[in-house]
Image (cartoon, rainbow, N blue to C red; front, side):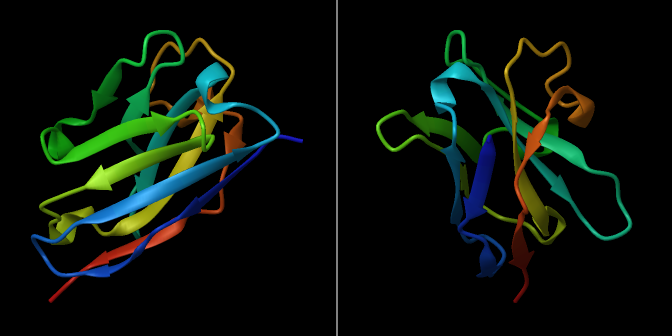
Length: 125
């Protein structure tokens, strides 16, 4: 059974940093397309970052470009989302998602069949 488990969320002040982790169970992270999504109250789920299984290339939504970094540690079978310079508008539940791929639109949640339970990120002073 395929499963991903997120961790690392919490409360951080504006300008602070957090690192989210996504551990894969039942598959290896280098064989799947992995993305991070987030959903704030009253808003649609949006794609935040993606890492390709084919060439390790990464993609980001415009609002996090230059502040967030997605990476993969194959030895730990884990994908990370390093979030720096956090803003109040980054507050949301963050989800890790996996697709055997290939994905056509990395930001489309329908492309991903495996989802975690999410981890809450709160940005407030």
